[in-house]
Image (cartoon, rainbow, N blue to C red; front, side, top):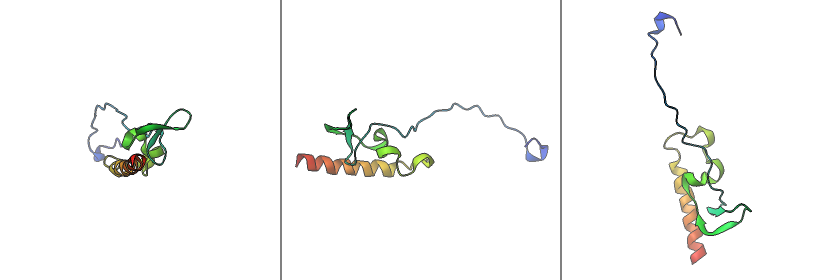
Amino acid sequence: MLDPANGPLIAVRLNILTRKTLGGLQTDLDSRVLDAAGEPVPGLYAVGEVAGFGGGGVHGYAALEGTFLGGCIFSGRSAGRAATKAVG
């Protein structure tokens, strides 16, 4: 790496920011938010990143920008279906 044939060294200042914890509110398969006892909170649903995609998402720790869209759409669809069934 220090061989001059490899080119000059370049310094870059970085500000590290963590954005993805793969955590969130605990939900069931219908996207209903669960309380501390593991029971659904009536009328409360969570989708997308706030729900942690039901425990980490399909991409897990290999997720990159843009790969969370599928999990957002899928969990939103599940929540919509469950909410519709609950009121109708």
